[in-house]
Image 1 (cartoon, rainbow, N blue to C red):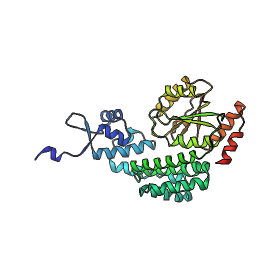
Image 2 (image 1 turned 120 degrees about the vertical axis):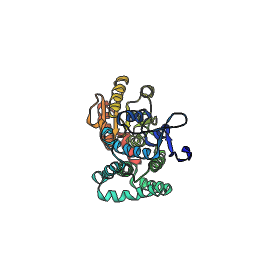
Image 3 (image 1 turned 45 degrees about the vertical axis):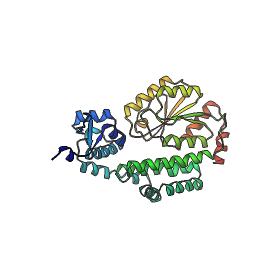
Image 4 (image 1 turned 45 degrees about the horizontal axis):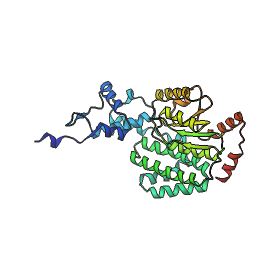
Length: 322
C-alpha cells in the first residue's frame, strides 16, 4: 500500500500560527522543551502538524488566555484540557444572572451565524441605550461572554471574528453620526495597540468614550511599532497615548514595552493603558496610568483637565448630544 495514501492530513507551521495565534517560535520552543507538539516533515522538510495536534493547540491557547502557564498544561491530554476549559465558567462571576440571560440572545445569534440580525440588534440597542451605556453596559459584558464561550469551545475562532467585525461596524456607524469633535477638544488622545496586539475592539470602544467626553481623538489602528507611536504622538501634539491590551500578551512584553515607550515619549504626553491584561493592573509602571474599566476614563479625564486648567464644557455638550 502506498504510504502517501494513508498519511494523515497535516497543516503547515504558518497555518498553525494563523489558526491558533501561537507564534512559530513558541511552537518550536515547546517542541524542544515539552516534547509537544510533535510535527511531521513534509516533502520540503518543513514542519507539518496533524489535525489532532492543532486541535490540542487551540485548547492550550484558550487556557493560556485564561492565565494558565504552558509548563502546567502543554503535556496534559485533550480530555484533561477540555475538562479544565469547561470548568472556566467565568461569566456568572463577572456578569449577573439577569445580564447573562440578556446577553445569551446575542451569543446565540453569533453561533447561528446570523450576522445581519446581530448587527440589527446591536444597532437598535445603541440607539435605545445611548452610545455611552451601549459601550459600558452592553458591549463590555458581551465581550466577556463571547470570550468565555470561546474559551470553553462553544464559539469557534471564525465566529468570534465575525462577532468582532459586527461590533466594529456598529460602533463605527455610531461614531460617524456624532457631531465633529471641537478642534480644540482636550485632551488630544491618540489610540493604538502594541505590535503583537492584533485586537482593536478595545481601542474602538475607548475611542467612543473619549469622543463622548469631548476629546479630540485619532486612532492609528492596531499593531503600531513603538517608535511610530512616538512619532505620531509628537507630530499630532497628543496629550494622551491610550493603549489597549488583551490577556493573551506576554506580561514581560507588556511591561518592557510600556517602560520603553515611557522613556521615548516626551514627559508631557501621558500613557493610559487599559484592557484585560492582568499585569497592567498588578504591576505599576512609572509614568503609566492603568485604567481598570472603561468607566474610569471619565474620572481620569476630569483629573487631567483639572491639572491642566482645561474646561469640561465641551465634554458636557458631547454627552448631551449622544
